[in-house]
Image (cartoon, rainbow, N blue to C red):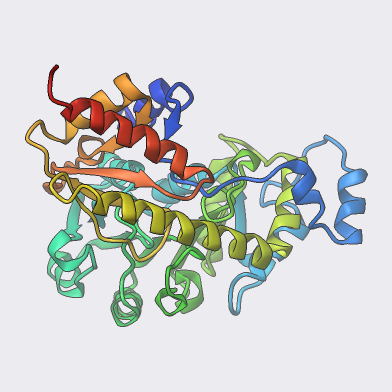
Length: 382
């Protein structure tokens, strides 16, 4: 591999995430305290927590954790699960295990940067498939078919999408899986926001459930709101692939944190409670955010996303989205992510958008600061 470029979004976050007063672009759900999480444990898991030790654990992940993860999939077992220190490690290992310099990959755009940067760095060729705003950012299977090459080895998608919140329709996603199965292509599906759909009918099947080369990436960070656990995983029935990724993990985290594995197991067993809570908060916040944008139709264009807890709003102001986001954070402490952080080497990305998040509590405090900024910015001089 050649040297990886800077991760634009994470570099931006390094400067502002913990310094901005109002983090209005967070990509995770509201977290909970240790006390709240342990209150969800059954007797067996509470005993496991009380007796936890700090030795190494299995590279694949603790058996109880893998069993709890497998229970969130139809037709999968613990043998189909490989755990990682967060989703990013899993994505990294998967790209290295799947691609080589003779291979071609297809990636949807816009996306989370590493899903594009890693294939571009590793594979011989990568083709972008656009998610278009005029199509509500929905995937068009015809674009995927047009991008196929004889050496296509991998197709990468992310639904609900980051940064748009779009979800492919059911027919398109199943057609994509069938296309991959027919051609022996792996389908890498980033599903970290699954469970936060606005309408349950939009919830897609998980790629690992559909065919042997389906790869599902998930994590405790986003829909569950537990990023501090640093527990992610890949589910896949291609065990040879899992073995290759495990060998790469030996050079990275080696194994997960034993206490985090126990806590993640508790959370997964209580997933219905946690996801119901987070969906309710997202729905409430989405109403507040939509009402805010409706107050400023000359400045913002907004369509509520299909799922997840982020959306990609359009800024109409003459100063441009980059200036607008910079002034908001520097002058009023309101952090948003301008579209320059989601640019692609494969396809043009709209330049008048910004990512806004609505998964955390007290969103109205940030919206009030945002309103005050707009009032000050547009107040006529005395």
